[in-house]
Length: 357
Image (tube, rainbow, N blue to C red; front, top):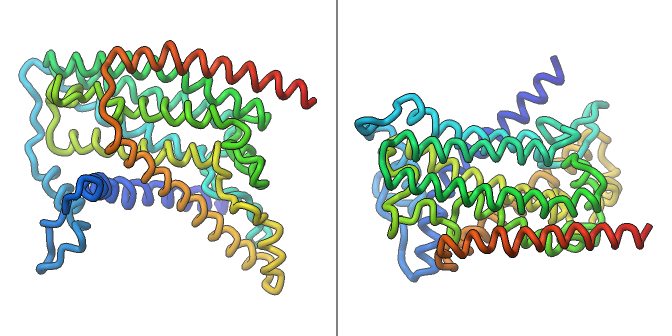
């Protein structure tokens, strides 16, 4: 019963943080950051009693608007698949967080608590298996809409996601070769020393993974699946109201997931540079063990999410900085550049490990 309550608390924390904070707030960040970069004011109209709160009421206005809009299904569309596809896109974005640790292991009340919902031995493989399911939602959305532009967008999305899924998997092979584990909690724990961070051991892997992950999310400069100037809106052209909002939300949740994975695999997870957990606990030695571990846990959770927020900002900056690639350039980058580079990275990593051993 106690384990069930702890697991439930972790699920509610992750679900509440993603759905209640990041998903709505990133719609505001998307507008406001682009406005600042383009010397505009950005979202500032929605207000309550005359207070606009620098546009923070816009996510609330958006939610009300989407709930009130008509749920339109075009004539000739497959109604069941048209309804299921946005759900298929949202669910994987949430499920991947089940294996991403947002803290280490702590002794509270004599009980060892790990800050991860499911500490799977094959955590990395689980993430790839679940996140790839979102491809089906994208393809089904375009096909079921009975619209040629939507179908073209879904074909582009499926080709792009297949191209980068292969390369993205290979970019992380070097990571679990270095750390000797597919378990994300072990990879995170192994980065307590600053110079053991993944960015130092796998610098090429980091840049390739980030490029592949952004391409998987179909964000600019890889947004040909939604190319407004070419195919109107792509695979979700025939969606409105809450269903459209679910596609929108899935995209933002994937930004958070990518940031959390980059933090866990390459940037020390919950660890603070040059400050070990043992050092923090020794500084808190005047407190009892449980209270010291609770403070350590809160510090690690804060550090982890600060890193995640930084990489969310970084992805937003890329989105509003780089122009869209042509479709043929995206395919060339995936198959002819990133895939061979990721294979070369595996080879070099293996050689270095053999030499060091």
